[in-house]
Every structure is written in structure tokens, then in C-alpha cells.
Image (cartoon, rainbow, N blue to C red; front, side, top):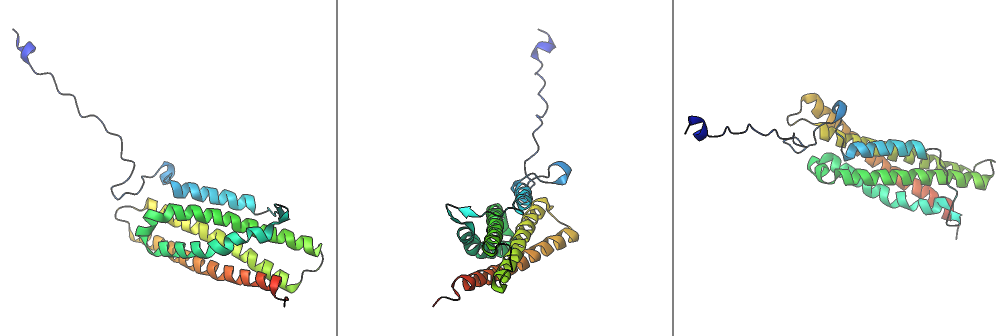
Length: 215
């Protein structure tokens, strides 16, 4: 019997493994152009598209009734709740890791509802005034509603940008990355506080407009 017959078969080389889907710190690995194709990126894209698409929309009727009194309940209730949630997550990175995507998705939905409510208010104002002079109280309420719309859009976009910064953060980020993240978090807190104040001011002006002269 030859030596070749008794020689052990060569062992196969190591099987190449696929690169892990996430970094050692749990953050997703970046996709094309260094941008992680994850939930925050998709939500940010959806928010930008919705903001652009809904900006000119002014719904007039819903279920046979003026749309504004129906739609306005969504931002009145949810803007304060989500503003508080966004501010809390901005200062607690561990909470963002668990609840950031869900909060971002809710912010996108409330942003859309706020824009629709503001547009419906403008349509109702134009219908009631018939293109004539706008009473001061109506103009003030409309101006506050327009400002609230801008604040909610800004809060949504900056919060989602903060989530994207988290996803791109290296295990040991440099000083610039840390400062950028802190600045974005601080901006989220400021915008959340402003949105909270403005939704109260806008709602109060609307209530005064509707019920201020009743006895």
C-alpha cells in the first residue's frame, strides 16, 4: 500500500463569513456613501417628502364637516406628548437606542397631521372671510398655527438627524462627532420646548376665537 493512500486528506481552508450587519457597539454598519440605510434614514426621507407634498394642501371638508376642527385634535394632543418624548430621548442616548425609531415614526405622523390641520385652517379662514379683510383674532390664530407647523417640521427633521448621527457614530467618536451630537440633541430640546409653548398658544387663541364671546 502506498503512502498516498494513508495520507490524511487536506483540511479545507477557513470558510469566509459574511460581514456582520452591525458594528461591535450595536450600531448598523454604513451603507452607500457612508449613510446607514436604516429606519432613521427612511423616516427622514419620508418626512422630507411629506413636508414638501403637504405644504400646499388645504383640506376643506371631512365627513361633511369642516376639516380643521377635526384635524386640529391630533396636534393639540400629540404635539405636547411627542415634544416631551423627543426632549427626553435627546438627553438620554440609551433611550434613543430603544425608542428612537418609534418616536421618530410618531413624529413624522404628527408632523403630517399638523400640516394638514394648518392647511385646513387656512382653507376655513378663506371660506369664512370670502377673500375680504381677516379679523385680528383670526389672523393671530392663523399666524400661530403657521409658526407651529414650522416648529413641528423642524423638530421632526432634527430629531431624525440626531438618530442618524447615532447610527454613524464610531465606537470611540472624536471630539467633532461628540460636539455635533450634543449640538443636535440641544437643538431637539429647544425645538421641543418651543413646539410645546406654541401648541398651547395656538390652541388658546383658537379657543378664544371659538368660545371667547359666548356667555
